[in-house]
Each structure stands twice: as C-alpha cells, then as structure tokens.
Image (cartoon, rainbow, N blue to C red; front, side, top):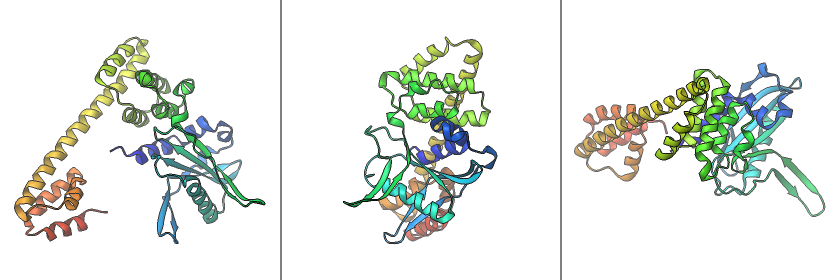
Length: 309
C-alpha cells in the first residue's frame, strides 16, 4: 500500500515555497522565507459527532509583514466525499478561531478518477439572503495537463507531473521529461532522492516501457545523461532494497505463524491480520517472545503491550 499522506507531506514540507510559487506565484512574492514554521498535527474534535479531524499541513509564515497560516489539506480518495467543502470550512474555522490569524486554505486532490471538477466553496443560504460563503483554492491534479508544467524549473512540478492527467501512451514520455527536469534542478542528494522516489512511486513503467526509456536516455547530451542515469540507478537500487526487505518480512512472518500454531494453536483472522501488519523488527521480537506463550491470551497481551495501535 502506498502511504500517500507521508509522500505528499514530505514533498510539501521540503518544498513549501516552491509549491506556493508554482501554483500561487502572486502570493509567493509577499512571503518571508525565513519565517516559515510548521505546526504539529492540528486535531479538531467534533464533540457532537464524537469524531476527530486532522488538518494535513499547517504552515505559519509572515505574509506582507503579518503572521499568517497556510492550511493545505490533501485528499487522496474520491469516494464518499460529498461533504468535503463543509470539512474544509471546519478546518479553516477552527484554525482561525484557535489562533486568530489569517488562514489561506488550499485543497490538493491527488486521486486519478473521477475527473469532474471539485467545488471551491462552502455556502449557507436562505431564500432571502446568503449567510456564509467560504472560498478555498483547489489544485486537482487529474485535471491538470502535465505538458503545461514542462517549462517550470521547479522540483514540485517535476514530482507532481507524475500524478497529473496522463494518457496511457504518454507514460514513458512523462517519466522521461520528469527525469530531464530533475537533472536541470541540481538538487542535493537528499532532496533529489525525495523527488525521484515520489515520481517512481506514482509512475511505475512496464518492462517494455523501461527498455524504451533507456533508449530515450541514450539520446540526451552527455552531462545531463550522467545525472539522469544516477537517478535511474537510485531507483533500481531502491527497488532491490524493497524486494529484499519484503523477502525478509515474509520469511519472519512465516516463521512466527508456524511457531504460534505449534505453541497456542490456530490464530483467528483478526489476530493474524495484526501480526501481518508488524514490521520485520517486531516480527523478530515476537519470534523470541512466543517461546514463552502457552495460550492465545499471551499473544494478545504481547500485541497490546508491544504494538502501538
């Protein structure tokens, strides 16, 4: 499973100003770069519904000499989201109420389908007058054409092109252009790895497409080609590392399930699901601990004690 929240938060926190410059250049000119801080998770509780809502990213930065917030909420799933505009207003209102500072609200939609336009406002109307109109900025990636972003020397553009509207026949071309754009940015290795990992996660090519990509890369002028090949090599190494990690986890999981079956008998599906979600390190810890188990309750106690929900 892709951890969309983590990938987008890493991208936006690392390249916050580049993100604002790309989509809201008129705003970026008034921001004071040395004033940027990010708030810890902002949790808003709906007491009546008994639910909690988390604002994805809240940046505090001076705008035209005054403190202000930028609220960026990312939405990765399209189903059952009919109340999004109301939720967006809730995030805005509670942040504004809590800190009493101006809030610039941005919704970033990253899902692939559907491509219908998302609302940009929340209203409360009566027949005789409008009580409220709350507006927010919307970036809907699946309605953006990747070609429109080729001219930007911007790391966020190179990353987000991988999530924009791409025809099946253009997949190879988009990845090639992303690579070429990254090569011109001359980022440090850590930032280059972040961008390249984002692209490779969301734009995986088939074996045939990879072969054609290599042919395209061979046509690039030498200095740029060298940088591009470094990026491609890092993707290949990362893939090998992930494969080894998955193999190690599967081996540890098989061992633990076999030993549990011998020690306490068959494990119910809910418990097995909890075990399957464990990291390699936790599986290895469980492999040692289960030697002292005599009943299923010992397993439950260990999971409750050692694994944070």
